Picture 1 (cartoon, one colour):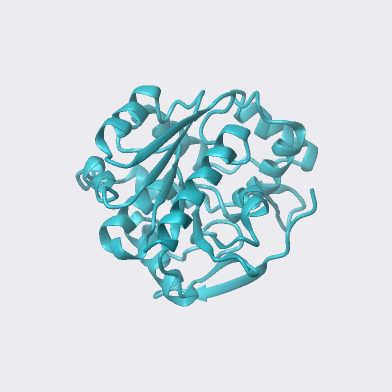
Picture 2 (cartoon, helix red, strand yellow):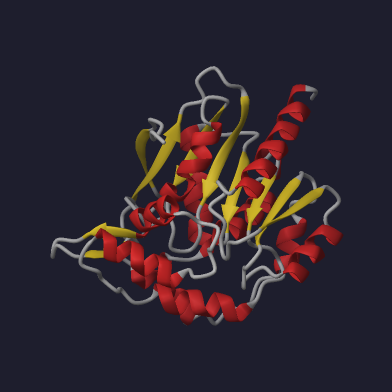
Length: 292
């Protein structure tokens, strides 16, 4: 598959960092814009297949958070917090003129999408929550933080692909090309000639040293009650369980749930079950917008 062209852009945060985002032009399409928000260590490249499927019919903006991908690393690790991420995202929304958009949030990005529902309720038209919700397994989040907090360089791209395969054995539905794409997003070439993680390992420090009371995730989730939600779960996910997904379906007045077989945390959204659900959901959002 030939990668679609996209504009590579940057904007400045309140504390002076340059953050990178991909901006896929909608062409003549008038569908709701997608704002793609990745997981804890992930970046805009994770949404390449999603953009391939929907660019042309809608604008798609994919952010690299501070400390990830092609965005600046923070000088102070204490800024790697959800509060700062949301502030950065609000700057991006202003810089790109987004309104009536659909956040597509994977893992951490899903939590940030819930916060947007609380702080910018009129700006969003719906939300896609990818393998995340208010009822998650804390052991899985601790394991992610342990993995993300130490660099493990590898010598070349075949070794990087092998490392991703070893890290994600529960993704039996992924083919070679998907593992290759995941590795290319996961690693970057360092000045020492080795491939390093494509994120600042210091980003887990605030998680490990957190002393504030845990946020009420159900209250965050209920901030989305005014918009339709698509909740996607990886069938092998250890973060969002089947019970967790069912609790979301019981709570929200306008929610669709889908489980993607053969993948863990988190689906890449190109898998047939996920891709079909996203397309149907966005068509519904677009119909609703046309009749408003």
